[in-house]
Amino acid sequence: MITMAPWVMTSNPSTDSQEDYCFRKPNKEDGLRVHELIDSCPPLDTNSSYCNFLQTTHFRDTCVVVEREGKVVAFTSAYKRPDSDDTLFVWQVAVSASERGQGLGLQMLNELLSRECTRNVRFLETTITDDNKGSWALFDKLNSQSCLRGEVTTFLDKHKHFSNAHDSEYLYRIQLRK
Image 1 (cartoon, rainbow, N blue to C red):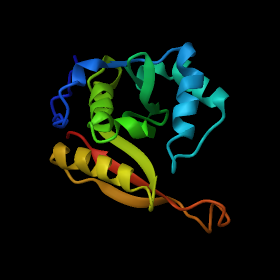
Image 2 (image 1 turned 180 degrees about the vertical axis):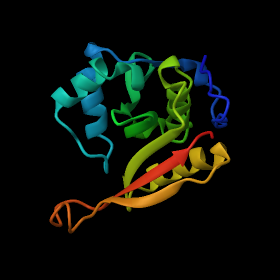
Image 3 (image 1 turned 45 degrees about the vertical axis):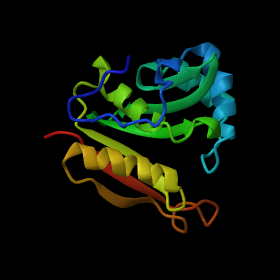
Image 4 (image 1 turned 120 degrees about the horizontal axis):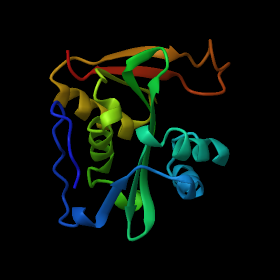
């Protein structure tokens, strides 16, 4: 069963097989499977497999794995900002192509926001490149459900920070509650 934070509403998945999904904290054995999932989800940046092992161990309390029939089909990585305990930064949301359209991205965010470790979180932040339509749609949904107004600013500029080697990253900051 997926529980929700009171300020976030659930999506309405278009399938009757939601009970086939298992939402849980990741563990060390998930590291390589998470790496392979992210690699199969462009335009997401693929980090080293070591990074994914750290996410599934050191940051497991603020990450979510979704399994279906024993296979990792979705993953969200996040962490509480060290300089702002009331802010959860969502690093990546990856959903296998075969599972898209089921509302898993929003359900993973809801799962994270319902955990004890995020009960003091008032803001959710993420960065998104201009061409990542799926991420914009997901975080726009979360923003509209928060009943407060999110803000988008430039976080890392393509020219100034990346020397044209990476697209600009826009910071989407969503206030979840006052």
